[in-house]
Amino acid sequence: MRLALRCLAALALLVPVSVQADVSEDEAALRATLERWTDDFNAGRADRICDLFSTDLRYDYRGFEERGYADICALLKRSLADQKRTYSYAAPQVKEVLVSGDQAVVRLVWTLTVRPAGATALATSVEPGMDIFHRQPDGSWKIVRYIAYEE
Image 1 (cartoon, rainbow, N blue to C red):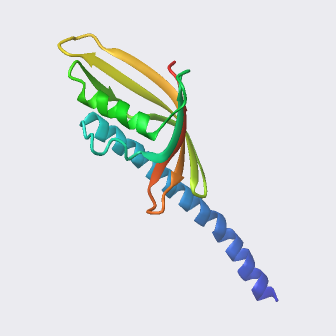
Image 2 (cartoon, rainbow, N blue to C red; image 1 turned 120 degrees about the vertical axis):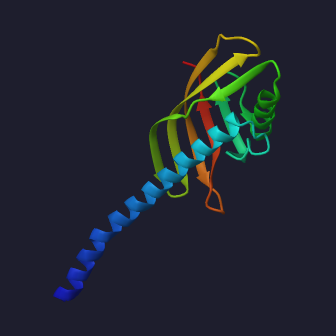
């Protein structure tokens, strides 16, 4: 009986470590996903720019009408193809990552810089928001919902 209790106690100590390791791995994967998207956007990789988003995406951005996947993809591709301005994102400032199973919430701040062609002046938009991710069957994370606004 004592041996069984010791085994159970040892197992109880291992479980939180295992769960914590999974959360840390998930947080690292989420951060890497955001970094990869930023790199893809800044490099103008239009063929990969929609990869961050789930096809059932719904989002609200600073008072505009609620939109979905097709809307964000079209907007991002137009931005990358724009000959009159150049858009670039700084690495997002991640404030918090909460992971629960196959769902995750990331509170973050995106900083977008817009440079008109031939101009030296820049326009900067600081955009706090919250991205809700869902783990996909292939293990990747995609945004299913987000809320953002301009500071």
